[in-house]
Length: 87
Ligand SMILES: [Zn+2]
Image (cartoon, rainbow, N blue to C red; front, side, top):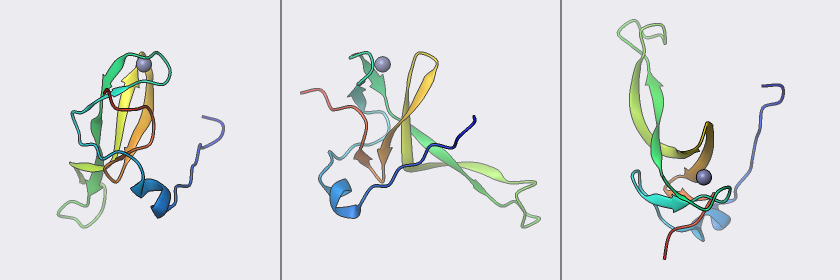
């Protein structure tokens, strides 16, 4: 990846977004189909206190969905930021 994508979302802006959880289906803005939100992972340092023996644990702070071969950031802190919920 040549450039690292970044985004900024204000707390007030986030609070206006729909509440979601891992496993929810969202309507993809790219293809219009339903895709499933998947939780992210974070690394927890291992017994050595470093990340060399780290363990991956589920973390719902960031959630994503896949559309074909592309993965999209779908939710932040339990709020949907990409796509929309089916009615
Ligand atoms: Zn899609």
